[in-house]
Amino acid sequence: MDSPKKTDESRRRFLAGAAGAGTLAALGESATLREALAQAAPAPAAPPGTVTNEAIKAGKVPAMQYHSERPLTGSVPAFEQNFEFTPTDRVFVRNNLLTPDLDITTHRLTVKGLVDKELSFTVAELQKAFPTVTVAGMLECAGAGRTNYLPQASGTPWGPTGGMSCPVWTGVRLKDVLAAAGLKGDAAHVAGQGGDPGAVATAAPVIRSIPMSKAMDENTLVAWAMNSGPLPKVHGYPLRLVVPGWVGSASTKWLQSLTVLDAPFKGTYMTSSYVTPKWPVKPGEKMPPDTVSTQAWPVKSMITFPAPDQPFKGGERITVRGKAWVGEGSVARVDVSFDEGLTWHRAELERERDKYAWRTFSYDHVPQRFGYLTVLARAADDRGNVQPITPYWNPLGYFWNGIHRVGVMVVPA
Amino acid sequence: MSRPDAIRAAALAAALCCAGALAQEDRLISGPGSTLTENKCKICHELQHIRRARLSPGEWGDNLRNMKERGTPMTDEEMRAILEYLAVYYNRDQPPPAPSPDTLAASGDDPIQTLLNANACNGCHAPDKRVVGPSFREVAAKYGSDRDAPARLATKIRSGGQGVWGAVPMPPNAAIQDADLRRIVAWVLEQK
Image 1: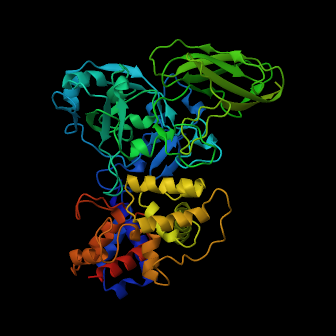
Image 2: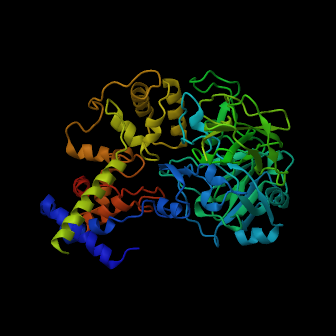
Image 3: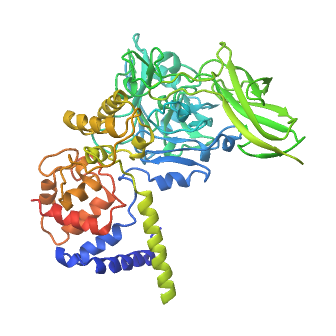
């Protein structure tokens, strides 16, 4: 990247600037400091051993909308996910700490805690030891859709459909790995820890635990591939947990250890972050003492076609398409409305394949009038839950699963 | 480079510089405690996270406790001062007062302290005790008075680093102005 020419130019620019400032002589420093200042200018914007935001962004489509640089957070709007599954360069980005630059040949996963024997695998060993499985599954930040809450809660300002993706994962089943280690009688939770460093040494490690019932689900993976390619660094290379349907933080990236526990892990990412009030609070109130750790996402849907403000000719058929999913259970139906919810029409819903993957719905509509037309989608699950008009407000802005609404223009032909 | 080219280049450089300055304008409303708040919060994240969502004092209290658990290096006293600041300037239920000088900032009129605060050095370093990173005195002693000490320290400040003082990484400060960097380097090396 740094051609000698560029370096020379930046040095000239610097020298020109320094001559005006006239402070170098006063410091009694000459060539070496000047050299250092000129050379250090194009410094990597990341500490050693971590990946720069520029490198991460290079692997993403230009449509990716970034909300912050430290930590890097970004996602594409719903209409940019109008694919069967989310392409890798459109999967949302959200870390708690920094993105480590790990070596797949030396990286190890250890399995410890309440197990009969501790195990340690390289990625290659893991691939050889257990059957490889490939499943599509939802990955969704607990705060996805947060900006829809009023009043605003602090945290990544995900838009109505930001912070959610459904790629295809390849790895081994977590339950196979745990079985190889042998679970002790009181094993109840599994905690994943990643190798991501914080900006300061005092940074608490990101550790989340999941109950054994979810750990034993055949869709819960230790994965090394996304959409048939190696995991991008920002998505956990070389190894990550995939706990589909549950809040994204359960799917530990850069997975380096699995610890079997007799109770939920007690740490800040279990007890202070990723929690909701046990009982709903009045909007704007602080977190009450009784909280629950976030797990499965409630039923939700989004419209991936049409895009907002897309123009249609009068009499032209609009084939509405979208995605529907639920963190546990099964999507039972999706309804769409073209009159702000006055009447609803049952959409066609693709059959269920992988349990935790989103499912595509579609509905053909021929507008009967000109002007602004809104499309609403509302999903229901097999347990009688339906997307609410207003999801319960909570202090950290989690689990927003309100109705997605897209407006288009119908113009004379 | 021909003269018109040079002018164009200069204009472009000026435009880029302004654009950069605007993009880097990540500040909080000035007031008692604003500098401390900026210094501590900027260690890990941009300040827009604070500006974006005004919260109630109770929520700010939870938020600060959460951040301390996550590893923000701050004393209880500092946390109280930050909470007081946020509860006044970023309170959901009342508009913020007009900006005023940060009377709590150690800088006063000291230009070096102003620089150390503006670049968040004071979030992790103190004159003679370890906070997150080494004290300025320790840094000065370590770099000594070698001819290349200023150059090495300047590179370290700009690029960040890890391993010199332990596993603690120092984040890079790529955006710091050359002139400011020179002044900070010179001051730090005088602290032994």
